[in-house]
Image 1 (cartoon, rainbow, N blue to C red):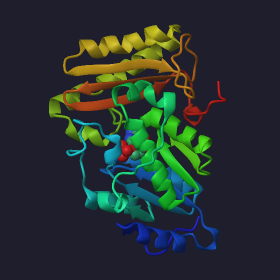
Image 2 (image 1 turned 90 degrees about the vertical axis):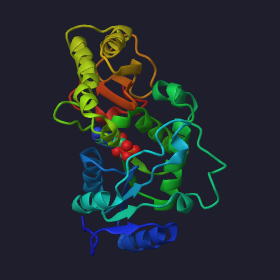
Image 3 (image 1 turned 45 degrees about the vertical axis):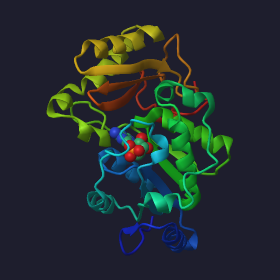
Length: 302
Ligand code: AMP
């Protein structure tokens, strides 16, 4: 893969993005894309590494998308640090960072026409965040239109999001190859997330309970517990009993259809969301299998 000469280009406008990508695409070079909301961490950078494996040019977007936040959610206090993000992106070999303002992203105001996720978007997190996935899919579709990537990488951390993006690309024939990269964790098991910056020292110490609960249920599966409802209930019980946690759901689902699984099998996904204080945490584990990530969002697999 040839890297673009001149290092990272930080871009604020759609027109500059189009011009730069046209230039970088010259000679048939392929473009990989990593959409983010910024405040980058190693989880994001692992997506960049994945994109670099498959494409010549890597573009990363930083945009805190107002469409995917509900009233009373953390849009206004979402963490931001563009300078630090640019340094991390440069170090990871990103060629183009697109960090538009809200006005640049939506010059005519919020989009009138949106991508509706259907029943898949009403499950799991969608049941607790109405409109969230419509906002996610609409912005990702718009970003795909602006960047026109050959491939894009998403993290299994946001498992339901990855499933929905796969479906959107299939259903609307958007022609972007989607990769779902593994979930990166801190040393104590906590899933890396920009929102972890919200946690107080006490909450940060308690936060790995979420992963430990999921991991405990996964080990119970391997020890012979195959009842999907009971595996979910184990996680809920741990979270409910732990001070500071207010769980929303813990559910075993099929990795492609997101349907609740009654009889657990390797490859099914145990997903959970909880508040810890004022911070919403999500996490998931895949039952049994060693490297099941490629199956996320794949309807045919089973
Ligand atoms: P965000 O900035 O939180 O919207 O995330 C941007 C992308 O990074 C999404 O595809 C996420 O799934 C992915 N991502 C976030 N955290 C992690 C993580 N801990 N491991 C892997 N990917 C992640």
